[in-house]
Structures are given as structure tokens and as C-alpha cells.
Length: 150
Image 1 (cartoon, rainbow, N blue to C red):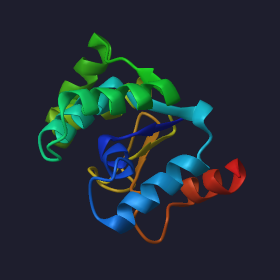
Image 2 (cartoon, rainbow, N blue to C red; image 1 turned 90 degrees about the vertical axis):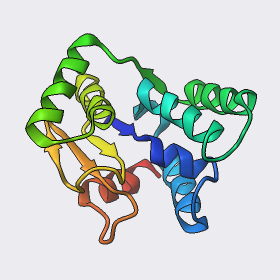
Image 3 (cartoon, helix red, strand yellow; image 1 turned 135 degrees about the vertical axis):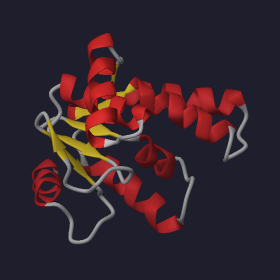
């Protein structure tokens, strides 16, 4: 099962946030099968912005982190088709455009899950279900995936 990762998961894995979520994000990424993980390019751009803005890291440090994630997982580019779908999500579901683009890219890349805490947990669009990996109880789809990837 293909799984897209949102920016907040990567930011926590970089140590940006509370200790519990940072630890959980790292554990989650270690338990998932890396060949099935997809990083929408938008998430890497947002991660760079967060690292140089909120986290006050240097552009060089942000670049190294972004390139490290890109080396570890498949990066999915934003297409014009995905951007058009994001515009529709923005209008039809009031999703912020950049979050909508991440969801559209996940759908375009045949992901079944999008791990994020920025959407409504359980929201499904074009076969992609948004799962907040920090929510309790943990979503059945995610639990099953973690169980089979060990």
C-alpha cells in the first residue's frame, strides 16, 4: 500500500515540535516500508520553509535535511493536473490550496493513505484516506500497515 507523508510528519521527525510527536514520527517512518512511501515535492518545500523560518536553521541545514528525505523516499512532483484538482478541493471542500495540492499529488501517485494532522482525520478523496497518525484510537488502515511491515 502506497502512503504519502505530509510536511508535519517530516518536521516532527526533524525534531521540530513536542518530544512525544517527534518520537512518534520517527518511529512511524521506521516502521513503514520505505519503498511504499511517497513525499509530495510540496512537502519538501514546506519543510525547508519551516526549518529556515520557525526553526531558525540555516538554508544549508534545511537543504541537507530536504535532500536526505529525498534520498530516502520517492518524491512525487506536482503536475498541472494535480494543481487543477487542488483548486477544486479548495473550492469544494475549503481545503487550503497547498494542503489540497499534497492530497491531489497523493491521489495522482496511487497512494491509499496520506499521513497528516492538518486535515480532517478520515477524510477520503479519490481513494486516498487522510489519517492522523497521532490520533487515538489509531486508524485501522494504519495499524494494519504497521503490523504487516515489521
